[in-house]
Image 1 (cartoon, rainbow, N blue to C red):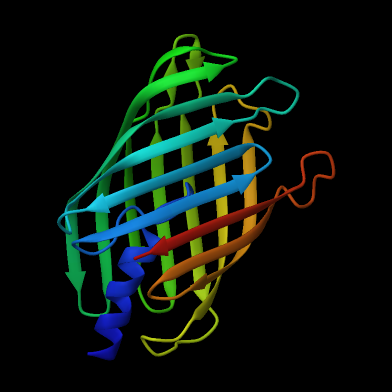
Image 2: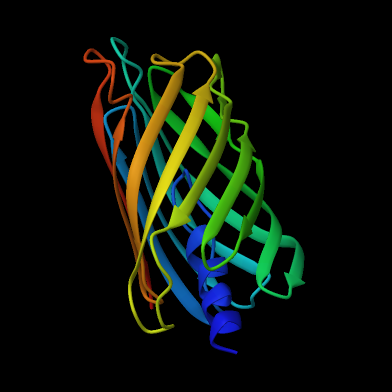
Length: 215
């Protein structure tokens, strides 16, 4: 039973984000999620009336190296399309989308639908995601995969450390490929990740912070 409860908590905190973070919390919960990096900055707040749907607002800023940034502000929807409850793991398919307005290098109506698959146990984690990021004259579509492992198992109420490696490519973005190794700390109420994007490329090296709070 303890393992099943912990896997359920992983479902909440592991479902997001390269983006950054989790997609939604439990029924009746609110979440604040943010990613802060040199090339991407995101902030989202949502409310989940059920375990299958969440609604919120999102601000996303893309900052290509050597170019002007574009900021997209809009309304966000997150939905759980399919969930598999396995004996010692869970797998999920999520859909998410935002509509709003872009300002900066590109201006006008913006939208960003995405789909994500994730699989997690108490010791292993995998995620694959694709996201369209569009505005007039802008096509910054994103594809990302993440894989990770925990250093050791913990009780449900304790914080568990993980190592996670992400590879993300973004169309028409510099750098187009971002590889980020990170240390991830997971608790039932928060998620904290500290990483370094492209650590072996001095000209593109940049720190990254992901944070999620559930309340």
